Picture 1: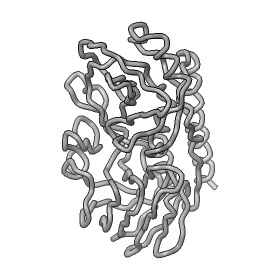
Picture 2: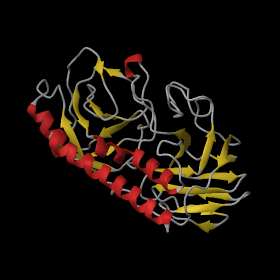
Picture 3: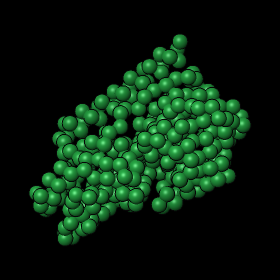
Picture 4: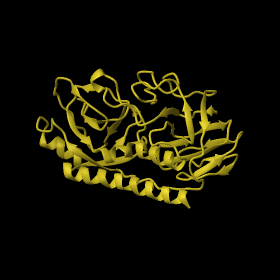
Length: 312
């Protein structure tokens, strides 16, 4: 069992989320950076889609009531166990009574904690344990974790300790497909969207990253019928400040769509915090496919390396 002493700004149980249910109005949820989740799970011997804790900003504390293998990945939160520093991207052996503390995030926004074992959670909803923080279901009673919350995890030790793995590099250069409504917007607006930098607004959350710019806005007066949207869709409200939809986003929307963030780059929004700058580039389907293949290759190489290490 583990006990949340301090959850920090936000701590929730997430896996890779729910797919195939958007026609029912049910969002995806899940880890905003699924690659961090997969890698830290592999470091402790868990299946790729085993739940993890998604920790936002840091300032959190967790007590372990059993011996476990753990791994952190994502941004560096200067984590310690009983005052001894541990590094993201490595597996560690935790003893009963140990306390993990995470300080403020340094150069990112979210960290993911994998704990080796079988998570004893309520029945998965639509095939996922992910917490939908908006609809209030999944995870532990549909809510972000609070002080005193406990999760029963049966320990398993299926890999070696002291293994490490890097995440693919993060970037503020975001590649997107061209949107279906770009011909309805002026060429000047599209050029501004691509040629100017944008920063993450403080009003961003797991539903969407709201963007602002001191240099331009893309105001419009278009009114469109609602259509399907998904994580990665870039909506343009009349205010002219785009919104990049993330994992907890709604399933339909009536704002024009500037584009869709390619799957390989959506993970970067896990680490983009309020005030961070980013810019966009339109790319082809072929370029997006190559970017995804590069990430898949990274995971395949890790799988081979871990299998080799565990056989030694």
